[in-house]
Length: 369
Image 1 (tube, rainbow, N blue to C red):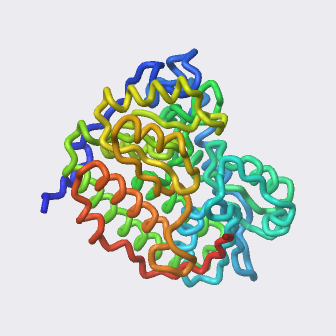
Image 2: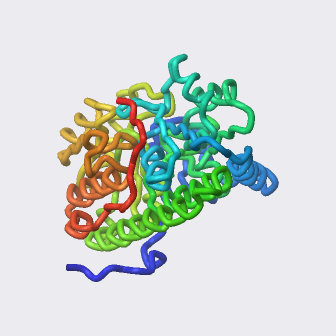
């Protein structure tokens, strides 16, 4: 058993500096292709405007009296976090994006408009992830309702990551904040604040459930720190199909050495593939990681030709199991991914397997399948 490294600051905060030969999107701008917050910083006035405006929008809207709070959400990890904070309160939660769907390209069917028209709050990730759903919500919102972009509200523009699948010239920062426990913790606190502002009669329930969820996130966070410490820094290298772990990597001292899926969501070119095979060999990467949602014969080919393991089970926003199952949760998803990555790269994930991710709070949300 390894001793937990309690101060996360003791982990390396690695900065990824890669040549354009590695990057599978346009290399015309080094600023757009280097996944560091420093290179992606916008002007000072713009940072505050986007960030603070999103927070203000989340906290807007009218207090709901007489009726139970009606909540709509997008991707399943957010649905679960909202549901856990709501718990046994009278509020209801309805997910919009079916699990196993590409949330980047999801177009909500017209039937979703009815769900959105009844919602008092629509929680979305933001950071330009679910624009069709956001547009449909805005077009059908009732008076006093709000759309809360969690990611946009908690992350200043100076901390945006632009990288392989999300180049800066494309205008879309990497939106996968929920794969990083400290950022998920910020989501949960904002969710609590929004619920309390709209439904102060149930403040005690929301506050107590918030504390339970945060305590669980802290346990998972500490376990991830300890599991990471079992991997030498030179083995904490991720080559994935979908670019979902940029913020996680910054927090825990990992390095994302590449992502196969271009920003267009098309297949990479033969030249791209050849360069990645060379890079995998040069970087001494131990495994390449595919996605359950995005099957990739290309990544399997890279693993085979580079002589490294190909692991094709990572999940970005598709929760394990079926709704109602113990692991069908944000924490179940994160633990599954972290155990998969640590073990495939030769580390010890026993502390992650044993960490208590249960929360004494009911998840009554509807998850479309």
